[in-house]
Length: 417
Figure: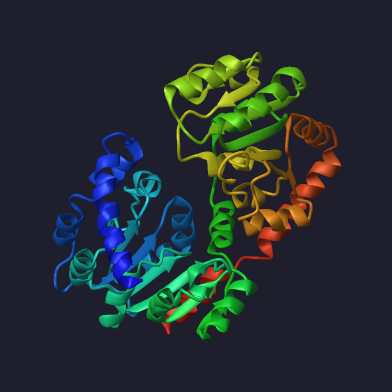
């Protein structure tokens, strides 16, 4: 199987270059990897101390971020083992790298090379990390084998394991061997602990999800988005984050047919493109404004604000009374913890079953999953009209966050020992 895997990686590398001609995202995937080794060689010398974090994409980066920022503080502390260390963050996916390639806390942000034997030997030789931190998943056999060979301390944080993964199948022995690289597994749930124990890995800690720490820390920051305050104008406001066209179609129907002047709506689409934003704006028959058009406008006069930029959604949730989190009518919902930490009730689409936090919030009734327009209308009408009901659901969401913080502290205690 290991032999076949290596053949498959080389074939995939060849095919990806062909697909990149026709696919913009794959083109970024290929183009971004061309100068990785040059970038690494220019950044790290033989005497460099490197702490390496690997994230598949943007969601995993947010899970790793609290730990990255804790270690960054220690790099300036002469009494810390990480004093003078440089931080490397790698991504597999363009959707992670393209958004966070300028992340100031890291010294270097780059793509992870494809998992060929040649690539990983060169990568590990150049970087030679004092510790490798993998976030949630991404188990690359050749890379893990090389880290084990070099006896580099390796941990997994915010990990999740599922019974249908190859590690737990009869044919998965070669992948189980890859797990031997990890000195410790910090996992999100009991199921993951039991699955790892079942195949002989007892070096596990049920630490929870570091994203709870990340979103909680946001509430501790000073957030002052004056435009959001002016737009809200003390009226009940729904913030719809990371929406896709299907989400937007349902929301627009409610806005056009059911909303009143005492209700405000902020929509932050997942994809920011001129055509999509313009189509969304034209579909709304209420007074609507784009974020990019706000200058010299009286924001309080508008009922709908469309956020046609990136990077501010998390903070905008502070101004919400109700949150709609998009993606549930597609491949899966986006981050429900970001609005929950501000103590607001949440509405999502039907595709949430891979997300434990969504299932938890649904179980404690701080979140509502809708299947269609009728269910959205019913849910929003109740939330907009009943202040006590809405605030109670929001308080439950906030309590859920508070009950699950502390993962970062557990991980840092291990790392610093």
